[in-house]
Image (tube, rainbow, N blue to C red):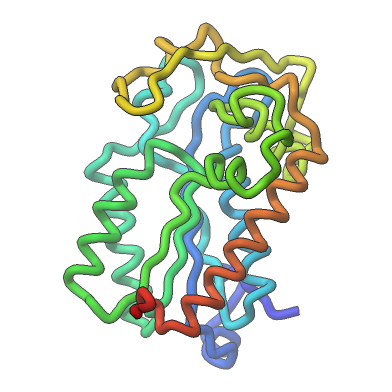
Length: 249
């Protein structure tokens, strides 16, 4: 099988592989309750990236970013956070590095909500300056998974929540040895569906998690992973056929 981790290649093997696509995985280092590891967001995004790359071919995965913009999760230990400006700059410069070496097709898989505006800003800056590059972003896999699976897959809040039913389930499918369901506790905040109230996480829960992590199962997580990987592989193949541009009629 073709090696897809960039960090495992050298000059000769990378050049001979004739890669034309890269996948970036962005995560965080922050509390996800007493039942999930601090690196959950990165573990998930990176695992999805690796499997997508293996199925696609001619695609490599850049070493993941283990830090995100997590200032709003700092009420529980242990959180390592970048600022919005720093993370935006990192994203922009990673994309510019790929472009410098002729990689003009990039998929970003994001694992953390606080990264979303930074990814949007950094990717938009690069796209405006370099119209030839194709950049696609899965910015909230936890929402997408709920849309792809049958509506009765999850028991509470369509699987949503920080360290909730969905995230705990996919962690059970990816890093089961780091999950301790005996310690799973979360709370359900009453949030408006249309107007966003800017929050710090301690306003939503007494714990390090929201949602219903106790409802998580490895089977749900496996279904989420399979659905997401399949969808992303199909998406990238479609983009390849369209030159990484919107189709027009």
